[in-house]
Length: 302
Length: 317
Figure 1 (tube, chains in turn brown, blue):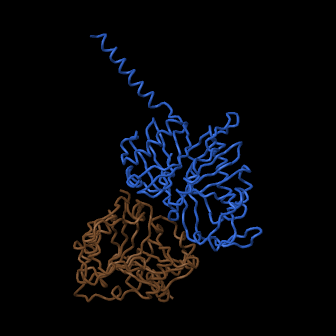
Figure 2 (cartoon, each protein chain N blue to C red):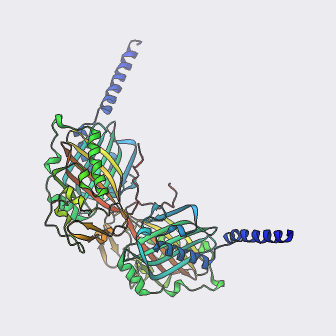
Figure 3 (cartoon, rainbow over the protein chains, first blue to last red):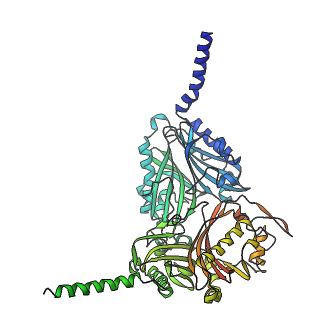
């Protein structure tokens, strides 16, 4: 009896201990992607209660703090085909771009989850309510393979370097100077499903000054660093005061800004960068316009 | 010499008291409207410092806290032709609905100023950046004269009564029940320059095959057409113009996007407009004309914001 009791106690102890141990283990790529998939399944089922969340889970949609279960949780009606993940096991962060259905209409979703002890502590979303964007992404089917390939271990760059390289992209936009950022010659950029780096490519396009109406990209939040794949994912607030009415395009002369750029607005840009050999090879973004000066509830008040 | 000191001191005191009296004197209708006009001129001159500002000033544009000088201050390019004011000298508040030009494009704006000791301490603005709205508003010409008429002194309602009547309107919207709102039979509503009541010629966008805008204020609510608006909160009644029977405020319409259709008596099950099948908050600045205890006119400017956007003024005393 005594042995049985001890044995039972020991087994009970192991059973009781095992979830704790599991919770303590780092959440690897598979685990992080699993959280995204569970989140999407719960979203479409309109049932946030099935998710493991921390007591103070923080949820935002388009930079408004809401209760988990509000907004897209009430309207998501299905999942689309496109799925792209960015995993950062070291920081317990995972990013995602994908397509969804909202009351039967296509939309795109940028999602970030912060995982703490195998529970969701932060949910940050940007919803692009554009059927065209969803269609373009779904027509592409699978993500650009460059965003999925593993960088050979000897070629991997430190986290700080990946972030610094990405940061130069935003410096280059603010300065209207492509040479400020280390672009790979093959670099291209897709925004809301559309290729926007044109025929001239990432670097030369910035030199045309056509992005000068973007006066300030702040805050720049580099949140997910996927070292294994050489990816950086974050949220970046593009601020457009609307007071740049024209630019001087080298070789072309005065170029009037479109009416849409001649008014104040901010754009929340969820953006992913593939860095290869220290250079920006690919940029993919989902973005939505917000009132000028909109602030992320994840950024402390200054 | 000893006699001189008190005389000088007395003069100094009188001068100081005089200044103080002017500053603390109530800012009446003309004073409040003058501040709105100065504000619009200062915007066009890009010079916020030409205004009498309180030491601490709070400024919002479309529910975002900004520095005075940002937002429309950098893009306003010309005056508009439409100006409608509601003045509340007792509370030191003034509301305004009007039009302007932003880098040449027509825009509509609502403005609320809070004035303390003749200095501006709060500026709340909502900008409607749809050129059609401003064009439609300007096409109306002058404001409906009903908004400008003084209510005979004997018929004036108290501030609390005026607010309670306007508040019933939002209860009526939330409950889709026109009968709980004291509407005058002559009631009409204009939203972003579009008359949205008693407008039989309006063509609704597909897939909507009936025209709820043909109905009057009360009957329209009864159809359930507004049931996609689940909640109107917060409701901030900010300017009460007792003399003219006006209430002006800011109201956040919460639209979760979950109401897909409505059963309309006589029409059957009608789909909601696709635009209301996504969550959003509609920021509505609304002006009510109340006469004999009934709502005679509603005029609103409204702009779409991300769902759940809070007002930075909500919760302030």
